[in-house]
Image (cartoon, rainbow, N blue to C red; front, side):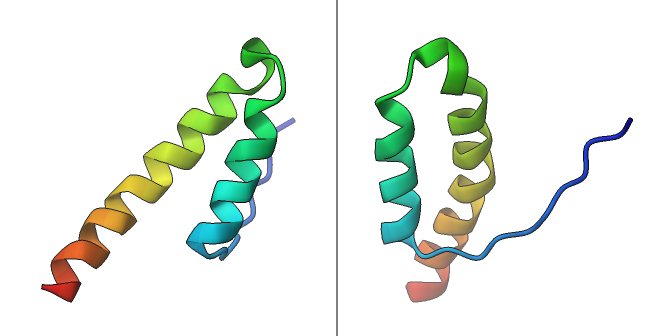
Length: 53
């Protein structure tokens, strides 16, 4: 069975709340998810910084 994906649009404050909540879980349960959030958000944040210049 193939994993299905969905796209979410959250603001930075909401993402930070999610990461804070995940950080309270054991690392082995959440490290991949935190990594995915970071991998997907970093390029967007860098692009926003460039756009704001």
